[in-house]
Amino acid sequence: MGQPPRPHQRRLVLLVWVLLGIFYFYLSYDYIRVSMNDKAFDEYIDHAVQLAADQRRTQKEVRSLILVKAEELGIHLRGDQIVVIGAGPTLNVKLDYSADIELPLFERVIYTKQFHHDLSYHQLR
Image 1 (cartoon, rainbow, N blue to C red):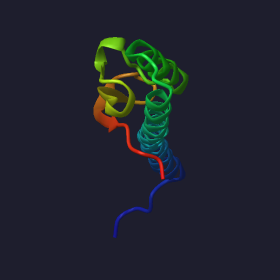
Image 2: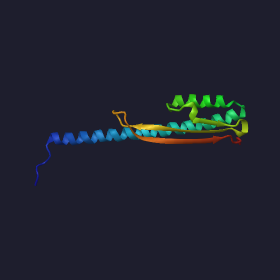
Image 3: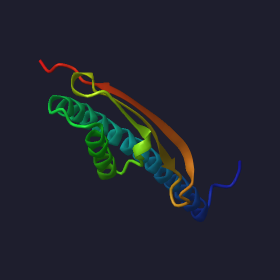
Image 4: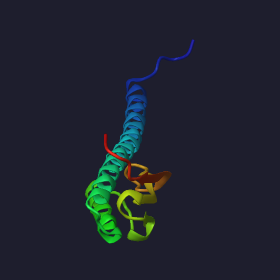
């Protein structure tokens, strides 16, 4: 039979497992955070489109509302990524953006999640 593991070997193995756990927790947290921000952003865009159509807001105003909310949620979005078409009941907003999931401590992107939104005015019931 082999020798039982020494106490310092056990601590080293435990430390490696703890570090791996922290690493995966952070990645999961970052992924969930990005997804939740996108969901909140999608709900806001839908609400903004409905209000903007009812109030006959200009395309520039709609784009500004969306950019302000994106900045508030920490979403990196540029004005040219937002396509606003029509006005009033024909209002339609399309946008695409990506969010980076980074490696903890090293700040290296390991995954880029793509988001696409295509929202239009619909009659409120």
